[in-house]
Length: 106
Image (cartoon, rainbow, N blue to C red; front, side, top):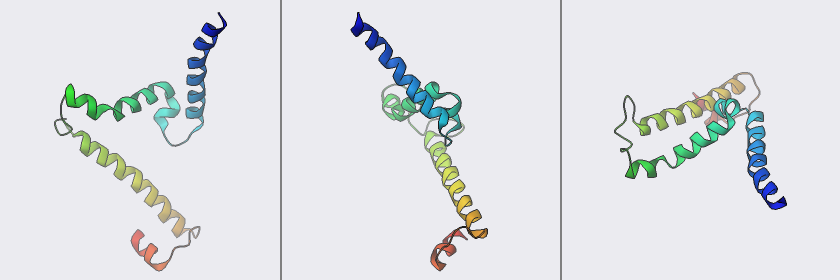
């Protein structure tokens, strides 16, 4: 009976721990608001290419944007936010850059 109790509590404790961690982080709003559903989504997104290979379609067949275009847009947005933070820190004197690094931000 004790092994069954531990076997039943372990997955629940794991999900509770992951949920608590996701609720505390500040990077992903989806993980903060819907911790378990977001983890499931990110897992399915990571194995998506393998599933589409056998089930649905290629990365270029989606509308209005293909998965490759969407992935590119998300990456561009994230990198753009980092670049804006660097520019803000540079303009307000909180960041010291060399001449070459400052030229890259212009």
